[in-house]
Amino acid sequence: MPQTPHTFASNSIIEKIAHTVVHTKTVIATAVCLLYLGSPSMAIAQGVNAGTEIQNIATVTYEIAGEDQSPIESTPVGNSNPGVGNGSPTMFRVDRKIDLTVTGNNDANVVPGETQSEVTFTLTNEGNDTQEFTLTPEAAVVSDDFDPANCSYEVTAISGTPLPGVVIPTTGNILLGPDQQASIAVTCDIPVVSGGSLLSSGDTSLISLTAQAVKNSDDSMTTETSGVDTAENIETVFADDQGTDDANRDASHSARRTYLVSVSATPPTLSIEKSIVSFLDTNGGTTKTSGTEVTYKILVTSSGTGSINNVEITDPTPANMTYKPSSIILNSTNQSDANDVADNTDFGISIANTATIKLGNITAGSTQEIQLTYTIN
Image 1 (cartoon, rainbow, N blue to C red):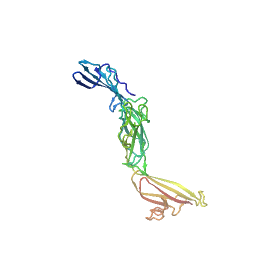
Image 2: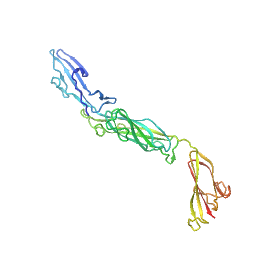
Image 3: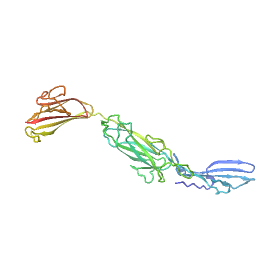
Image 4: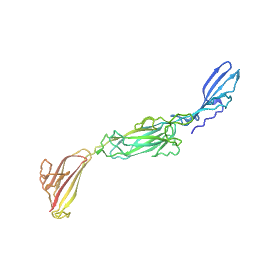
């Protein structure tokens, strides 16, 4: 709202901005310009508050034939009527400047699968009016290695005294007066895999935060004034610089922070699982009687990092069963029973009455599948 100018009791407390004395034989004229800026508390680092009414009156004093004449005060359209109080101030209202800055404070070291990993930002209202701001975190930033998920923000603190109705912390819009700052924490979940590959040390992801001015102190929407500026009206002027992900003078600003992946090496481990895939009796059914073929599946799973060497699986023929010749299948490929270099599998050659599958060296993080069939005696 426009500020009401102070009324001064005497010229002794009026700031004299200009004082000009003109001497002639009959006229001595003194012009005094009086500037009313309102309360000194209105002066802020980013300038005078929007809507502040600035007004002044110039006064001319003079003599004619050695006698003092009544002073004449100025008006916006001109005044020749002598006497204190016959003038009127020339005034204008300070326009609304929209200016803001978002800065990123810290990057974050993360591990794959980490949840709610935090980076922080600071929003500063550098304009001269109270503004309501929206905040938008964005994970899908180009030129990085992966995108975090489930990103959200929380305003954790503000500088100075919160404006009426402002409750901290908040996950909604934030209201800031001129020069006020808000501390914002953005949290995201870090994936384990990106683009089909496990995240590795040194992978990075950029997270962007954009603040947008949306509403002014008088509840009007934040839009830039078009047309000719006038002294009486409060115009809205965009004065913000371009951020990392926004344009110049668009009532918004943005900054980025980085998630940096750090993967600790873990020793490789192996696990083995054996299960029954099917029963096939001599009549095409699934009864478990003499002559029924039983197909087993063996899974060898490795985890951790690095390689595992000289891996070999042996599967002795169960009691009361007979191995079905040429039934070994490794990772969907049929294997021979001979001990040859073609497939490094055999039955009964390396070890009597036993299937032997030599996998050799495998990389941690893989799974090998073997199927083989025995017949109930």
